[in-house]
Amino acid sequence: MIPLMTIKQFFNDMRRQKLRSALTMFGIFWGTCSIVLLFAFGQGITESQIKAQRGLGDNIAIIWPGVTSKEFRGLPTGRRVRFTEEDARLIKSKAATLKGISPEYRGWNINLRYKKQTTLRSVSGVWPEFSDLRNVIPDIGSRFINKRDMDEKRRVIFLGDKLAEDLFEEAEPVGQSVLFNGTPFTVIGVMKEKKQNSSYNGRDNRNAFIPSTTFKAMFSRRFVNVMIVQAYPTASMEDTKSEVYKIMGERYKFDPSDKEALSIWDTTRGIAFLKTFFMAFQYFLFGIGVATLITGGIGVSNIMNVVLEERTKEIGIKMALGAKKQMIMLQFVLETLLITAIGGLLGFLFAYALIQVFPYLELDEFIGTPRVNMVGSLMVIGVLGLVGLASGYFPARRAANLQPVQALKLF
Amino acid sequence: MIRMNQVVKSYTTGKVDFTALKGIDLHIRKGELAAVIGPSGSGKSTLMNIVGCLDIPSSGEYMLEGSDVGQLSSNELAEIRNRKIGFVFQAFNLLPYATAYENVEVPLLFAGAKAKYRRERVIELLSRVGLANKVSNRPTEMSGGEMQRVAIARALANEPDVILADEPTGNLDSKSGGEIVKLFHELWESGKTIIMITHDNNIAATAERVIKLKDGMIDSNGLKARTSA
Ligand SMILES: Nc1ncnc2c1ncn2[C@@H]1O[C@H](COP(=O)(O)OP(=O)(O)OP(=O)(O)O)[C@@H](O)[C@H]1O
Ligand SMILES: [Mg+2]
Image (cartoon, rainbow over all chains, first blue to last red; front, side, top):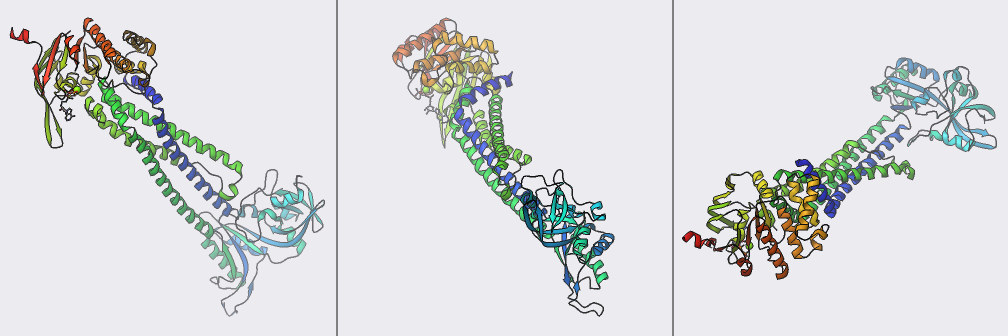
């Protein structure tokens, strides 16, 4: 009986006090909306940066040949250390922390031709593992180089997506034949589009890949240009590097502590930095969020204070007409909760809608795709609701504790 | 019906204590029509607010229909204000954003009345005070006399035995004031107990009994003839 009465009274009041309800609701709406957007974009930027960094590969290091800088068992410094596919197999069999490895031969200015289109490109000869190491993922309907390609030294080629576009334009590349310095190669796949913000030899989307065995046979190369190694996610790249120095040092007779004998680029260091940087960025956003909340809270609380006079008088009238204290407080709490819920929900939906529309603006290359953080959003709504409740609740309770005549006379 | 023994009401403003009622003894019987008069500041409103349970005495005893108001909880007082007393203010005290209909409905809502009953009752009350055609008007869309009639309809909502009115015609011209007084007389004739503060001697003269306050004390309680007899 009491709640029913309150609900009816409550909706009457909400309807009548449109301005007050609307202003409060707007405060909550605005706070929620801006903070949800803030966090969503923060999250989007962070993710996109980390993803772009991962475009090179997860947990990998790139190894180049080097020159010894330390004497070793009577051998002089300044000896070149180069490596072969055989070395890659050796490392693969010996290094315990190694998840994957692929050598990479590299040929430049290779003439690729499809019908009338020609282009000079760099082509890599790699192992099937290369796909996983470097996140060179085949698009739908495509495949990467496999073991049979390797064993049979097949003339097959995998194209970066931009390169495929340049050569084939609208046509479907897979299954077509391209001329590779005049030799026909079958296209087995096209790379799925990816973000890549660092490289050691140009972006993958403009390169082409063929089996290392085919490459070796065509160009009669002995040494590979680089090796890509990947550590297990649980292992440290430092350990993998030490293992590589040790194995290679034994084979080529150099001091495993001689860091110049092989030059290694540990890409995980970049990621570590990036993670730290974006952690700081998240804290910064959190700070802005808190500041916004405080401002929004003050706004809501001001609105509540503006209506305090009206509210106190109203409470006086209602008490004179027989309202009990609990009814008045219950109504007030319900009102704030509903206003908060509606304002918060609208703010959230508005932000959500913006975030859904955002990908169509094609700005994601620069700032990523914003993502909604549900827990954060609920917290924002909760905090604003609490502020609204507190800033109105205490004056209302004070008024409800007065004798009716005092509430009527207070202003 | 209403009985007061040595009711005192004092206010503390800053460091100064002020006693607005200095020991009121009053007895009002069921069905009486009493006018309360006295100079400004004599404590008329203070007394009326206590009678109406809108305020509590600083000391003394107030019995309403046999129960000691001083002993009641705030919820019980709310119940009394809701069902036993109808209060009419000089300043109307309508909810400003609510229509005449909604204003009259408020005490019925607090009493937990059913929707159908509420609807019938509100229309009946507004017709009774001659405002059947103004149900949807808000206070800003009504004259003073009309607002006061809404307030009277509202005071009558839960069929209280006692109607208290603090200068109900104070903000009205003599014509609409006269109509309001006429309404109170009709209510009195229908059996209600009515206490009305007024500055207007003509209005006081129409009452059955005139209580005169002076400096927070009862100067004459209008019962001289009987008490001296
Ligand atoms: N809340 C209060 N605090 C302090 N003093 C008060 C308060 N309310 C009333 N008074 C004082 O009590 C006295 C009686 O006030 P009250 O309102 O009862 O007078 P009144 O007889 O109704 O006068 P009027 O005819 O002008 O309405 C006045 O002197 C007033 O100043
Ligand atoms: Mg007065």
